[in-house]
Length: 153
Image 1 (cartoon, rainbow, N blue to C red):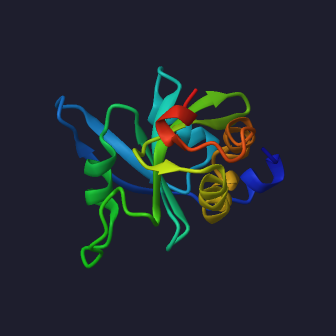
Image 2 (tube, rainbow, N blue to C red; image 1 turned 135 degrees about the horizontal axis):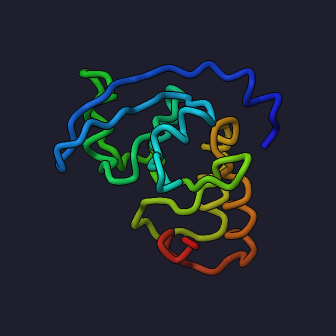
Image 3 (cartoon, rainbow, N blue to C red; image 1 turned 60 degrees about the vertical axis):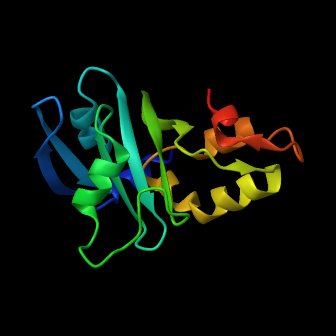
């Protein structure tokens, strides 16, 4: 990823909460690489939620469910669920010096064209996480109907 873009980011602490295992977890919006490392701790994996309406990306510890995090960070008037078409959820892994998207959480079946449209809608998250590499490695078989789950590493 482009280092000059990372340095220009405005990140902020969004919230923190006690998860199902009784541990306290933080959630950051538009995170810096340092904040991603803090969230991921020793696992080097984190979960993300990208909101195409607000252009915000939230990162949390990999053990926290997307649904739980989304319920904490969304506006109280927002009726969208974590798996709304305007929301992209998935996992990212540290691949120095960037955070690379390793999988998307969705059971949607889509064609190559539909997947590419999804990528274009969420292309902006490349400022925070490397979605480009995931897109390139999983869009090489045009036209074949497949599940997003089939697109995972």
